[in-house]
Image 1: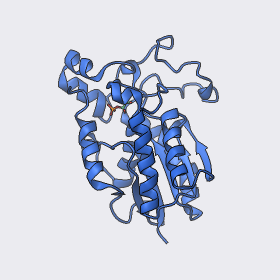
Image 2 (image 1 turned 90 degrees about the vertical axis):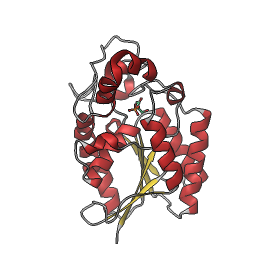
Image 3 (image 1 turned 60 degrees about the horizontal axis):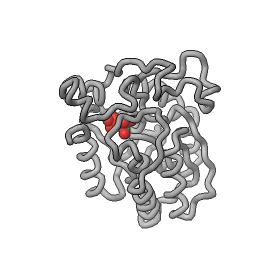
Image 4 (image 1 turned 180 degrees about the vertical axis):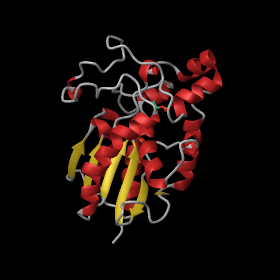
Length: 248
Ligand SMILES: O=C(O)[C@@H](CO)OP(=O)(O)O
């Protein structure tokens, strides 16, 4: 029996709308994001993909998205587990900066390196800085050295994959339909693993907000076929819009 995994990037947030680098800053969904989350729930119902268990990051925009979508799908009652390991990539000193201004200031090459390269992190964010997560109670249990001050995609893979193995795979193994509600870059990390995308090619992958991406996985928990967005046209348009961010 194939295993069913549903990946969902949170809906548009108020900082997506303002075109600001967000990372670990805990912003909420915009009105558009709430509408997208509703639509995600409708798509799950239309396609008969009904999650039995959900995993989310500890960021409010992902939690809100999952709550709305699951409520629409009449699945608000399923078990939930949350982990910082599913959080968005920590964007370092770029958190809170305007993407268009950053592009203008540093040029397209540096901008793309920071946004999409595999292993070049932005400069670190100082612990006392306005958009730092240092001292945030939700990270109190992290071991010394685990709280990032910046991350590249490689770092995200290194902290996300242990959770995939220790917490998500066992739910799939138990025959559950698993919903993972997370973020543009933490989901890029998971898709890179599942689809075996190279370090170079992953730069071209963008995940749209609010559209469920469904994988059928084999007994090795790798895809039997390519993942399918439940609304492929909207997904293509959404991914193109993400790629174009920064350009006003
Ligand atoms: O700002 C961010 O945290 C992410 C996702 O919104 O942006 P980007 O797509 O530029 O990596």
